[in-house]
Length: 309
Ligand code: HSE
Image (cartoon, rainbow, N blue to C red):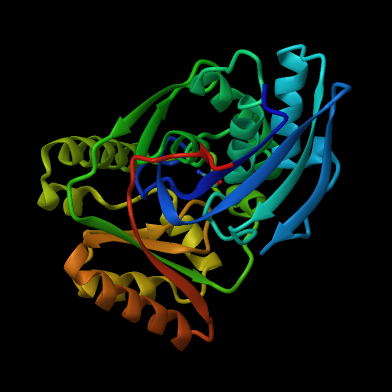
């Protein structure tokens, strides 16, 4: 049996505009790596955190990756434990699913060291416990795509069921991450607890339209349905220049543009030929508001977390 494994888990776009907390897709451009080694006694120790975000708790209980693996050790009643090193490729508070990716990479690496590996659905449940440490709530829209890959819909929390939704060929995601930190807890804390019935109907129609359009390669329908009428309008003031960045993407023919997860990254879906121009103008729109940014153009691969060493 192996004594050590390293896993990579990709970043992800949560919500995908119309699927708050239930829909997300992978971003293959960046991700987190976790190296896990077996130890003689049950428990989890974090040896080091390296990469683009090191200001994270080293106590396993308080760390997303640590908490996820600890849940595995406890619930599976393992008679051994794990020591881990987390290498962050995803900036903290970026809206790119960094806490989810660390939790997913940890359970995928840990799973490679079990005598009888667990199913992906079991790994999903352990990773969800890790994600809850960072955001203060249990949601799966980053965990599920990071683990399974592609555009993933999750139904249910206690007994989650996931579905990989086909993405029309040639679609790219443009991501622009302005250099600012936005706490997921804060971005969730400002949300109203109630929703207008008319907005709920509109959002449900958009989600249903978006998913069915993905199955039927109907880009016009994706464009019409790609509008979050509940969350985005509440959060947009947290991101300087958001309206201009979105307008820039739409002006160049993006199928849609919204906040990635809790923000501040803004993402747009588009046909491949338009991606470079959309990216350039989104970056310029943030710059006009005094924000430097990193940007990526990503395919929406059906590849999720994997053991790489
Ligand atoms: N669905 C979550 C949110 C993603 O928008 O708050 C953040 O982790």
